[in-house]
Length: 201
Image 1 (cartoon, rainbow, N blue to C red):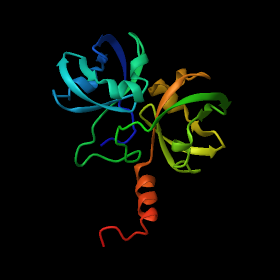
Image 2 (image 1 turned 60 degrees about the vertical axis):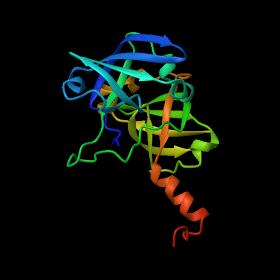
Image 3 (image 1 turned 45 degrees about the vertical axis):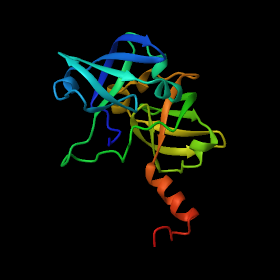
């Protein structure tokens, strides 16, 4: 479980494609110092298992299923990535409940200056947009954001200066693909309503 509050901006230092899978090496000194082999770490919103930890570097093995459903297969050396270690008992929940399970890949539609921040529109599929509501939560590349607006084919989020400073979202440009995870609570509500709230009663 994660919160969508990025703890560190890491850097991809190596990629190795092997049999349809991909091995990623990420330099993230702060996270690496607290990570053991087998721990869960969110990389751009994707929950991955640490396969090796060497100094300031963590190595992950992303299987073909993960690559097919996320943007991890497009990462290259020197690309910045948003890093968050799994939530530990007693730590504050600063964002919202995030599983690290990507629901879809969206595409940046537009990036507009708004005060000292940015307003970003992300084009998404109907399967994603059905769970998006104004003032609700959504995760974009591992970052917990509040939805500012929902259009027919996209949602908008307002990015404050701090988010732009400490995450990879400062580099957003139209056409860029991003990982999206909707609020899991919305899925549970939908499921309960569909069953009339009587399942298991």
